[in-house]
Length: 320
Ligand SMILES: [Zn+2]
Image (cartoon, rainbow, N blue to C red; front, side, top):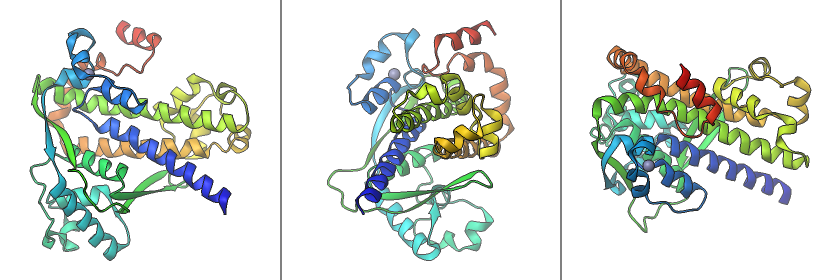
């Protein structure tokens, strides 16, 4: 059926886009301006961004030196691991794969016998965020495939992965990683805070894209359905259920939600919300030390929020 194919194709493009933005959020190395303009198909040299200290992006501020690392061998191990796990369990998640690669001592890993796998603990020296970036890249490049399942009742989004269609390596799989930080003590707390900001910003971009798409199907302007303010509120609160979305977003009504099928927006807030939960969980695991440091450096972190925010917003922040 041709129309079903068309909607599937549109859905795939949307998920690819969403993944692109998520990959952008995870990237704590490359120049934001370069990445952002690349997303819009333009070129920008990071040296331009580094030129003026006052207007450098957060990554150019925190990263002093980067190195391109070849992850082709690790990639082959990852594909083989995902293949084994999906054959055994039918589905696996990014977190589970990373836990095995990092040699996690969790009871569930040991009980399932994953500590006996060849891939157990082979990426011990690779940081968790770089593994997430690598897996994200492998999904974008088609080596792995991601299915997102959303549970409207519980408001959870789970991303399952399996082996993708691509399995040849015409060129090596590389990732730029940070070799030297500008100021290690400050930048580690900044990167945590800005992952949160970036997720909110990225969520807003995706919400707007999706709303524009929805409104174009009705031949109306997107602001007729929801205003910029309402979208910002939605990105900030990341509602997980229809009820929550109705309660937490001004201008949102049941009639609007049903008429324009705004569950399409809900699937975006659910996904980003679950990513945010993962980040929070990571924070809890890494313990009180980090939080203590965050408390002492809040004055520096508030000024580092990304440049997606409009001027009115940043003025409010400065007044604080
Ligand atoms: Zn930059």
